[in-house]
Length: 483
Ligand code: SAM
Image 1: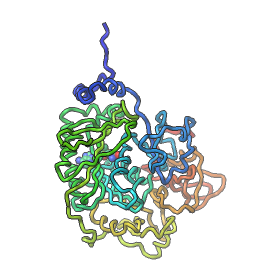
Image 2 (image 1 turned 30 degrees about the vertical axis):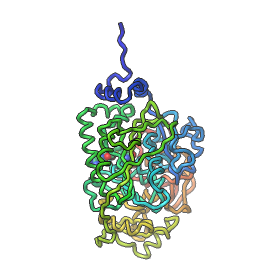
Image 3 (image 1 turned 180 degrees about the vertical axis):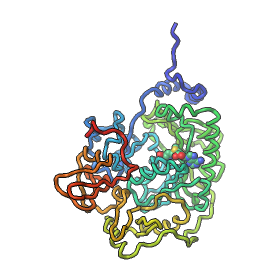
Image 4 (image 1 turned 135 degrees about the vertical axis):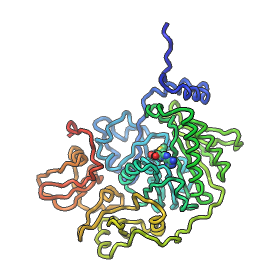
């Protein structure tokens, strides 16, 4: 007699039992979904996506024919689509140019949570506390008022560079990348209007996408995650101004990590903010009976109900008061205003120089800080360990200005700088950091471009064009068969 092997054979038994208890009669469908392929979805960069509208990924499909992620529709600033399969994004110059971000669809629900609970039409101070690799940060940058400040923080040092790279690609100048332990940010008390805590978790919702996460899972590790999440939330709470919004999300189904921390916040000076989600989205409202709110306290995506992975999100408003930090309390400053002549020269690289003030770091990096945020940036200069601050434009070497890669990818760059339109093959050679050769001689700094989007800098020397792609950005895969 052959015995029936469950679809999810090899998955942690205690996890499956927990899900059976959580889902009841839905469990069989959930279990079937676990062995289905992970949906692939991309979210457009609203300031760069013009060139993407008719883009073909290889020969396979046209973006206009793709299904939309329901909570990121055509009319929203965060249009997002499902792809029928996973292409090699590395080989798409538009991906390298920051035209879109590859993000799991459920986690884009963050947009709906923001839309329903904060006024996105006014400038705000926003902290993405657990930010790497930058999925939520790029979404936040896309939807916030342009005069908002967005601090993207990551505690694990080795993850800061990928965060920075993704934000450089996204190209928004109102962003700071920082590297702090959440418990080490208490000089920013009462500072923020919104704090997003997309917490490290047991990753149950990502098991099918990332089977390795399963190996780390145990009931003990869930307890450890829950305690760590509580510590992060306890550190996040004082950073919010009274009335500020805290968004807590995880990619787990686990009540110990989700509902238990909802309870913690509700008992620590926060009120839960229910969301109204269309029934056809199939997102499950989670209750915490003992809280007697009568409303759902959080929202859970399950892979058998939505086209996405497991994701939990819950929104809170701070009712307690924390005395806000005074912006002018600090006089210490590491950066200095750029000298007039250099400022005039650097300003030529910006589309709207009047919107920025220009500063210089001790290492010579020239920074463009949005004027609307100048006072805030100057305060943050001493309050944060930053790894990226406004738009870092480049450096003067004598009287020459050497533009940075971040400037090439920035949405603030002067649109009239000379460019060099590349074929897809040459664009890939550019990302391989090869020097390009052309029939006609080219001279000086040029923007390497593909389908109208900037990829980075080249400098023409006769018919040879030197490639200024930072070496860490070089694509490593073998591209011979594609060029
Ligand atoms: N928000 C990111 C995104 O959308 O791309 C994903 C964040 S991931 C779920 C959680 C992040 O928390 C990781 O980058 C991890 O390094 C960071 N982290 C780990 N331990 C932490 C801690 N004790 N405090 C704060 N963040 C932590």
